[in-house]
Amino acid sequence: MEAGGKLINGVAFARQLRSEIRQEAENLHAVHGILPTLAVVMVGEDPASAVYVRNKIRATEQAGMRSVSHHLPASTQEGELLALIAALNVDETVHGILVQLPLPEQINRDAVLDAIAPAKDVDGFHIVNAGLLAVGRHDGFIPCTPKGCMMLLHSVLPELAGLHAVVVGCSNIVGRPMARLLQQAGCTVTVTHLQTRDVAAETRRADIVVVAAGHPGLVRGDWIKPGAVVIDVGINRAETPQGARIVGDVAFDEVYPHAAAITPVPGGVGPMTIACLLQNTLRAAQGLAAD
Ligand SMILES: Nc1nc2c(c(=O)[nH]1)N[C@@H](CN(C=O)c1ccc(C(=O)N[C@@H](CCC(=O)O)C(=O)O)cc1)CN2
Ligand SMILES: [Mg+2]
Image (cartoon, rainbow, N blue to C red; front, side):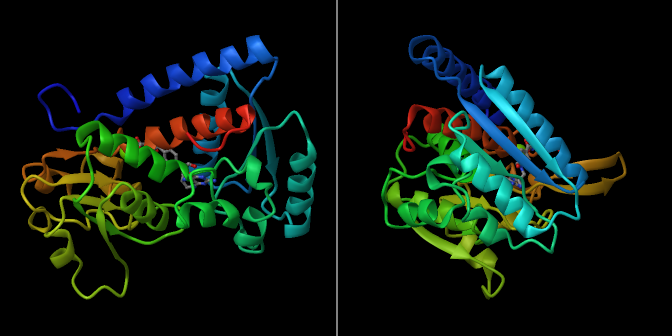
């Protein structure tokens, strides 16, 4: 948290983490001759994905690691993508493989994610890594966004045991792994989803609210218990009177006065996603999944 403030600064946290990763990566290279290498695979022309992929490649190189980029056309068939992944799986110079999501609709996302060798699955989306997390084992890769959310939470709440956490949203990328991590940190966890009758009634009881719903401004001021910590994972493009902006799933101006600490969008969780990807890539190169 900023000194005396309640805004959780993901940019500053991620910058510090990236500088620590760079030192470790340089050490791995200097001492063991291993240059951590991330293969970044993108299919199609989604403009937001193109920005994220560019940022990941740049961040990898700034962290003293190597990236190899594979950009396939939107018409790519599943078999072609699976063949590329099979080649990357056996390429000993590649330690981490990332397939940017979303994929075009002719491609089965789960088939692709499960084709990545679990030891190179730095996104932590492979069913083996999801399973290891689900059963409380610490030797798999943890998905980058929930991993980053946990780091930000620990920065303002060193002890999470006994707290009540509510996770709004249950995607495989954020909500589900987030709930597992919170539970393993000792929280009592409620996960809300599209069928939840009264989401606000759940969040009002929470000490920690993590929102990953993909719905701009969903969480309002009166949904938050005074003193709760709020983590906003949403990234939504919105038209405002000031022009196009990125906004979260939390109505920030309403929630800010109630919260003890809150992540902004942009500048909260997003930068941590990329920093944690670098950390997972370093761990893959070190032959260690867990931290
Ligand atoms: N294979 C993956 N695909 C996707 C993931 C992922 O973790 N792995 N997550 C998202 C997109 N994403 C990374 O890929 C990502 C999104 C946003 C940010 C970020 O830093 N956001 C900034 C604001 C960005 C802006 O202004 O446009 C912020 O919140 O400060 C990083 C990574 C879906 N796909
Ligand atoms: Mg953010």
